[in-house]
Length: 237
Image (cartoon, rainbow, N blue to C red; front, side, top):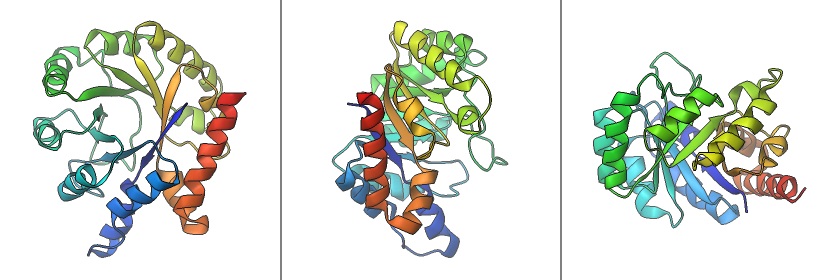
């Protein structure tokens, strides 16, 4: 079955807008799991604009499903990941000035530094995912540096750029052929998720912003269940 990972970053964004403890990202994570999420994703950014260190520790201790720890490939984040021991770490590019992640990681241009970084995480029993564009050069580099997983960046597809679905389909096929587990995410909504969910090599989708935004209107439980329904229908087709 195609897995659904729910990113709860923007529950923390709302909390941080006013300070205090409400709404609680852990509570959102537990509700998402109850509604059918197969795992929880959280991005601990360098500037701590949403998820904070204490959130990562609380979520890891409080959930029964896997935690996907999104992070930049820095020494600080590596130390926190090694202390937290998530199921997986997803390495992403990160710039302080960006509103959200703007593209995939340049694995091919950073292979010398990423290889030992990845090895350290894997030696601690943490699976390593790389958030990449569906580009053959980046996929080959991801396999070369020792990643377990690639998460294909679906942002350009979600924005309606021509040919992007075909690139995702081809990228998923080639990544799978190289022995990489294939995930996908960024910008997925009710309207566009089905085509990505139907790609047979994709085993997990990670969705956050739309889920938290739509939950304002219909509730977190209902949104997670609707994504689960759409994904199941697409994979069944």
